[in-house]
Length: 145
Image 1 (cartoon, rainbow, N blue to C red):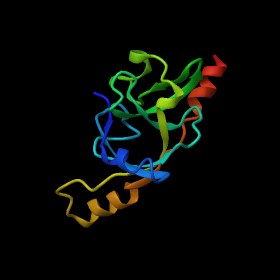
Image 2: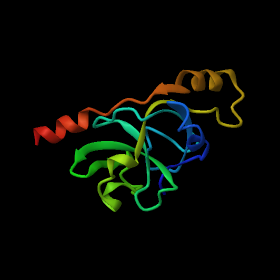
Image 3: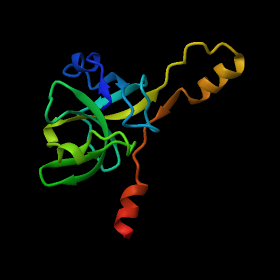
């Protein structure tokens, strides 16, 4: 299952440089989880390691979120952070540059239902909002081999 994004993110994209999206699916675990909300910078410059929003190459009405691993001839090689979930460039190849729509900057994790204790709310508050950072260590490891 690929992390599909809600269609709310598509409506405001043409007007505003920033937008919101919601993740569904497990392919970006542990970075992103089902139900996470994202702040996306539409049209932002993409670098290897960035988490990006793109149109699925074979279903262009479907928006997905993946990590841009490397630039190749013809576009970007993208992968999910969860190696067991699939649904990335290993399945559909290089993603053309024009299908990469934006860069994810921030993740907001809404509180789980049933969290009522002060300790549970405090734990949620500490981890609810985090920047989504580029993964730089992978590219260094690949170069060292």
